[in-house]
Length: 130
Picture 1 (cartoon, rainbow, N blue to C red):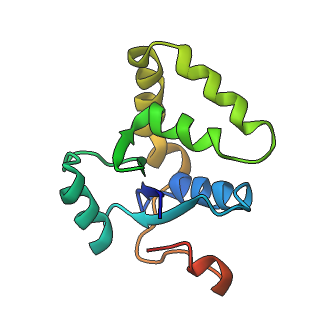
Picture 2: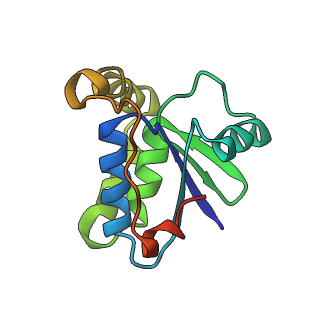
């Protein structure tokens, strides 16, 4: 497993983002686990990821990426023209992350939050979740 996406498991937007990635990743570059899961907590500790990190994290080739850098590195591997979004890596990180944090800060307000239930993946998708 070279690439693992850690995501907020109670965020509707984050869940939709995972589904979006899966549909555009037929080569199965990415595996997924929620930040709140036992595996997510283990990975955060293993890689020294801040306890306060509460949105997308990409673990790739032994390194971790957060915020806009994680999102752009994920887009780079997706089918279709989504990989072109990686060009935004040329925008200075403080600017990219400011936009990212604004969306992340408002994600529950705009898209809602799951209470107890989570989406159950199909059997073929289940193998992509840790």
